[in-house]
Image 1: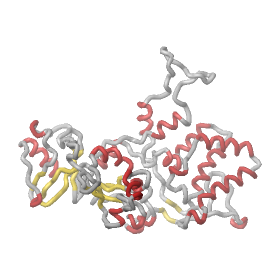
Image 2: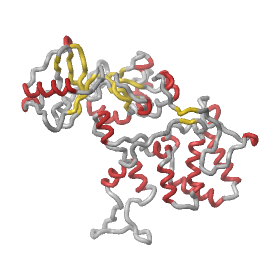
Image 3: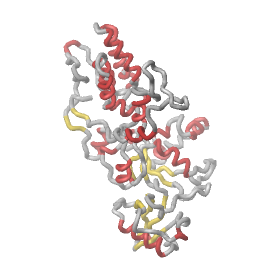
Image 4: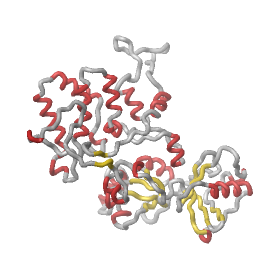
Length: 412
């Protein structure tokens, strides 16, 4: 994947069960907890001495698990029907269970999980990157792939040399920044890959298809847009894999916008559209296709041109279904708690960013207002909020399951 996409994708090893600060994982007997067990040969392990009840429970859950991964097995402790010996509750860190000819060794719940660490290779993200650059050393995240040709990154829980010990809490804090692909050994659907990896080249390499078919051509990008006339000579590439800086592809939309803004006869409409675009902002730097696509951004701007004298509710609806806004405010590929639990065994909630911003920035604002624009106050003289975090969490569930549609002929 690295050679195809340029992304730094690693499986993670070395995450601690007990770190240098003596922080331990929760007991696998904790109700609702997902614990991970590495599958090894029985000769590599010694069966841990456990209470009869604990031993029977863990053996039963491991052997009855439907997990088919050949390297690790995840189990979730049920809410009923199973229990562990009281004496074992706090003594289940480095547990090894030999069942038949197989050893199951308790490991960190992200052991052998595969992440895209590209973000962590940037100069201003991982603290060690800048230090390494100043000392003339290789990037500490890139080196695993570039120098060692290794698909695994070993987390420095107990490193040698001058690298400081990394705690389990540090991983918990930063791992949310890395898109997860799955576990090493899992079969992952192409559609579930992160955007940066879900490329045509990746699909072709693995014998899949990322498109419905048809070749891309210059076509209308927005409803009611005038058709292109190639004979006029004003054409632009919709996307390219050429050197973007050399060809100036990122400037096409600016050139088109300036041309339309200066020469259009409907100047009032253009000015209203400009004002709306400053309120309902999409930041190019937050969108992965910013440098390589033109039509997508022009289509987004045309929402404001088309609805300049219309209903603001229509504007909100259209920007909400725009993939650019979905990526800009991070509800693209947001997944429900139920989906995350059923597919990955993780307790994770839907992204709340857009659910909050569509109220705070795009519509109601933070506080109730009087007709004259002043804030309504409660009995204590405090502004009355329009919404609470309960509304944000509730509305965030609406913005799940949205994704870029598959590429089709005649569509950028």
